[in-house]
Image 1 (cartoon, rainbow, N blue to C red):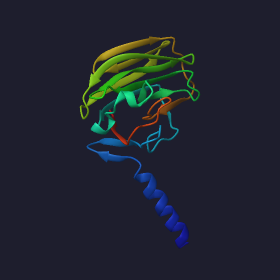
Image 2 (tube, helix red, strand yellow):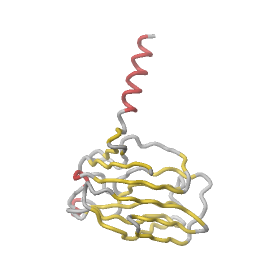
Image 3 (tube, rainbow, N blue to C red):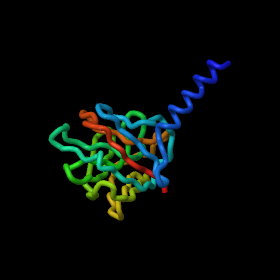
Image 4 (spheres, one colour):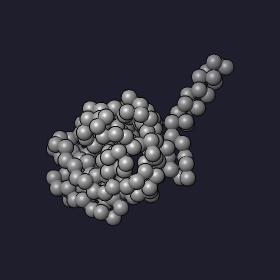
Length: 177
């Protein structure tokens, strides 16, 4: 019985420490040489989101140190990336570049939308309706045609790269509005 209790306690402590609350924000960490953040899991979600987020200084990196592309902050998609909508991000070495990153019939599409400084809070919301994705970042709207309704939509958590892995530990703060 004591052995089971010990294992259960370790399990609870490990998973409860994956994401910590900080001023209402959940703290996500993408560790060096990884793609996925801590606490990443498969969650079914709706085809909409409304978040407030902040990138810490740890998310600033030299863009010459990684293969060019978009990292992913938050969104939804199908299991095999045929259709998805996410907030994309990358560093220019001083700031965070934000954009729409999506898959339409398995084709990657992206659009620049805004630039923020680290530790600067911003809002992002996205949704699907009538064959289109809509992404709003800091009151700037991007409409993307060709989307399809996803029967089962999966939550997309912070992710670094495509080909590159995180060059260092990166902390991102997110809260659902």
